[in-house]
Image (cartoon, rainbow, N blue to C red; front, side, top):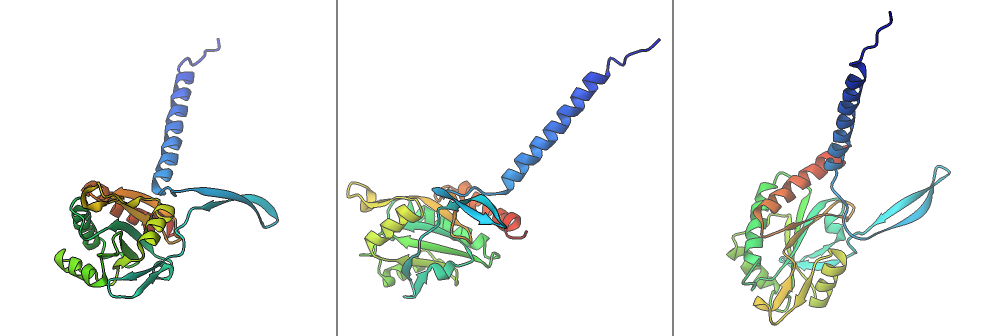
Length: 225
């Protein structure tokens, strides 16, 4: 008499379920290894090896020109092929800027082993933040800028424009605001291709720790392949 193994189907279903979870977990894990690319994007049709494919054109930081606290030019060439972090501040800021600077200073020290990392801190108050004033502020905050942290200035209108259109953060005059200005508290992470890969609240220590972790992830998962 032929018998049927009534336990076979439940076991097979269970095995399939385990395999499905494993595959799903691997997909999630792979996604977690890659940082998102933020900002607007467009697509275009291109031909590669005789085949027409869709290419994604991501938002990138436009060409820029600033002067740093040494009086030297800071342009796209300064950060070409490097990872950098951008933020916006002003030296007379009575509210969030001191906290942001303390957190950035700690971040700077914690990442001194990353040779390709650069920091660009843009003043949104160039009328008062002259080169001498920027250097006074650096001394006051006891910041060792080394050769990888640049405090930069440009015209007010130009700085606001690149903040909004390039880094996708706000900066504006507001006489009702404390200190007379409103500006973003975010630290913006830019990759080697000039694309925005993350925004982090500069007044939040945990967010700044995540910025450091994401930079190391970016280098380990995308730049070592």
